[in-house]
Length: 634
Image 1 (cartoon, rainbow, N blue to C red):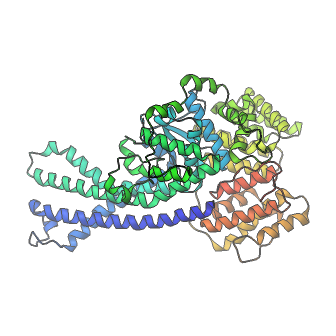
Image 2 (cartoon, rainbow, N blue to C red):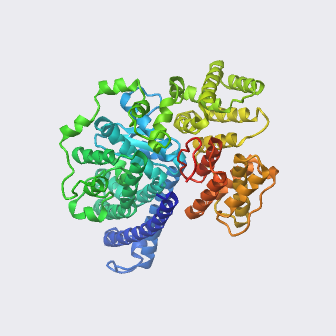
Image 3 (cartoon, one colour):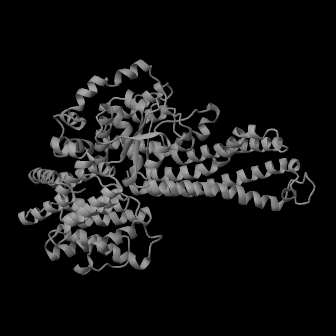
C-alpha cells in the first residue's frame, strides 16, 4: 500500500469536493431565489420587487442579493467551521459528537483494553498514539478517527462497541480507524465536515424560524414568515441531499482502503469481518444531532438509509461486500446479520476484563503468539505487542500518568557521563521534584540495559498522556527538555529527533509556508540528506557517498552539494522540514525515499537513524513503521 499515492488520491478528492460544493451552493441559491420570488408579492417590499410586476420570475438584482446573502452565508459558515476544526483538531469533532476523553490512567477495564489496542496499532502504523474518546450515550456499534495530522488525531468509539466486541474484533475496528489516519482520510473528512456545515446552514435556519414561529403568529407578516421558513427547510433538505452525495463520492471507496489497512496491521482479516457481522446484528446508528454532517467519519453507517437511495448516496459500502472482501468463504448474497445473543457471547464479562486488567493486553497477546512464528521477523503488530509487554510495570504505568510521563521522556535524555547526568538531574529536580528526577534515573537505567529500540515506542505511547497537560505544564516540560539537551553543549541526531517529535506532538498545528519557494528547495533537501548521512557514518568518505547516492533519488533535477557542517543547525533543519511539508504528496514520496536511501546505504538502519527518519517523516505527515534492531531494509 502506497501511502503517498493514497494521500494524492485524497487531495484529488478535495478538488472534486470544491466542485461539488460550488454546485451545491449554486443550486441552493437558485432555489432560495425562486422561494423569495414566490413570497415577495406578499411582503410587497420595494427592494424585493424592484418596481416590476409582482410575478416577474427573473430579477437580476434580486438574484445577486440572494447570491451574496445566501451564498455568502454558506461560505462563511463553512469557513468558520473549517477554521475551528483546523485550530483544535480531531478532539473538537469528538466533543461535538458527545465524546468524553478517556484518561490514560483510567481504571475502567474496558477503556484500558481500548487504550492498549490503540497503542499497539499506533506503533504498528508508525504514528503517535492518538487521544481516545468514548461516545458514552451511543449504544450502537460504531467508531471514527478524526484529525488534520497524525499528531492531532483522535480515535473515538461508542459505548456499544466497548460492550459488545471482543479483543480481536476491537483490533480490527481500531486498525481500520488508524488506517484512515495513515491514509490521509481523517484530514479530508474534517474538511468535508466544514463544507457540509455550510450546506446545512439553511436547514438549521429554517428549523429555527419554525421553532420560534409561535411568538409571531399573530403579526401581519406571520403567514409569509411561515411560508419562508417552510421553503427554507425544504431547500435545506435539498442541501442535505447534496451533502449525502458529496459524502458518498468522497468516502465510500476509502472504507475499503481502511479495511485493507486494518488487515495489513493485524494480519487477521477474521477479526474485522467478525466485527462487521456484529454491526449488522446490533446496528451502528448514531443518535447525536450533530451526526448528520459527520456520517462519513464513522466505521459503519450512522444514519437511517432509505433503500431506494442507498445505492446513490450511502456513505459506506454494503456490509456484505466488505465482509466478502475479508472472508472469501462468505457469500455476499447472504445477510451478514447475527442474533444478538451470538454477538453477546463474544464480549468479555466485566469480571473477565477486570482480571485481564492486571496483565496488560499487550502482554496477554504477546504471550499467546504462535511458538512457530519467526521471532526475528515478527509482524508489525506482534512487534508492537512485544515491545509494550517488555516494558517494566513502573515504566508502563508512568506513560499513562500525566504527572509521571515527563520522567519517562526525561530518561531518554540522561547522559552517560556521570557529571553531565547529575547536572541534568538537578535541572529536573528544580523544574519538578526530587521524586521525578529519581524516576527518570530509574527509567534511564532500565533503557540502557535493554537497548535503544524502546525509545520511539516510548515517545509514541507517551504522546497522548503529555497532551493531557495544561498549557503551562506543557511549556514547562518543553523548556526542561531544551535545558537537558543543552547540558552537554551539543545536539546529537537522536536529541534533535526527540525534540522535533515532541514539539510536533504537543504543538501539532505549526505555522507553515503558504507555498514552496523554488529557490529554497534544493538547499532544504540537501540539509536533510546531509544530516541523515552524518547520523549513520563517522567516516567522511562514507558520509559523502551516502549523501550522493541519496541525492540521485531526490525530487530535484539539479545536482546537490554537501552543505558545510556549520549549516546543519537545528533551526535550519526544522525550517527546512516546515517548508517541505507543504509539498505535494508525490514530491514528499520521492523525498522520503531519498531520506531512506541516505541511511540504508551501508545496508542497515540503526535505532538512531530510525529516530531521525521518524522525526522527518512525522513533519512530512508520513507514517514511519517500526524498524527492528539491526534490520536490513528491503
